[in-house]
Length: 185
Image (cartoon, rainbow, N blue to C red):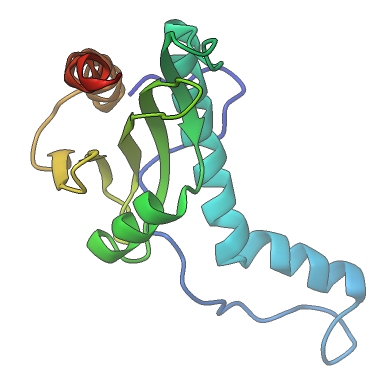
């Protein structure tokens, strides 16, 4: 995967789970500045956030290519493609499937809103790192089905897989909602 200039490094690295380096300094526990520096260098939370921000940049770039970020007026089809950092159902399933992972998703949403009803479908195309550091792309679709699309087993361009899967989901969900729209009275 090509790295955008100025973006955080997404080089394969195991996601840290614990702090193990001792502090330096004459005081047995070091100064506040040393403690803060130690935290910045060893914090699993900060490392995960750095990785997450790198993937957010990729997802933002893909979502921007679609240019679909706002709801359509009532009685028109809404098509949205946007970066997603935590819709509860999708991310809970991702955590169940890939414990300890760091993931960001491109959410694909298709809806049709009338004054009384709003049929809607959403799929999530995830990209990120498993706890062992391997990069993956996965799909959680509107039927709540999970599938791993790309991982270390193949040499696919994961950003391309993410982009193409989002485009396919947008077309598929648009076709699917047509039947719902026809049934509305």
